[in-house]
Image (tube, rainbow, N blue to C red; front, top):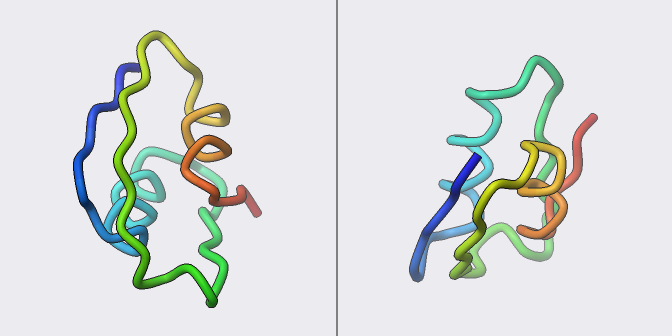
Length: 57
């Protein structure tokens, strides 16, 4: 997958990625309001989740 986001709340990104995954995407409570910027090309969903600082559960 390719993923390109700028200044997006981690909670919004987590919700989006959760919709693509059979597993739950977990967001650390201390980071929930942080904004993230990522530009990823040809990565797996698992790698995208990890790069965003999220976890699969």
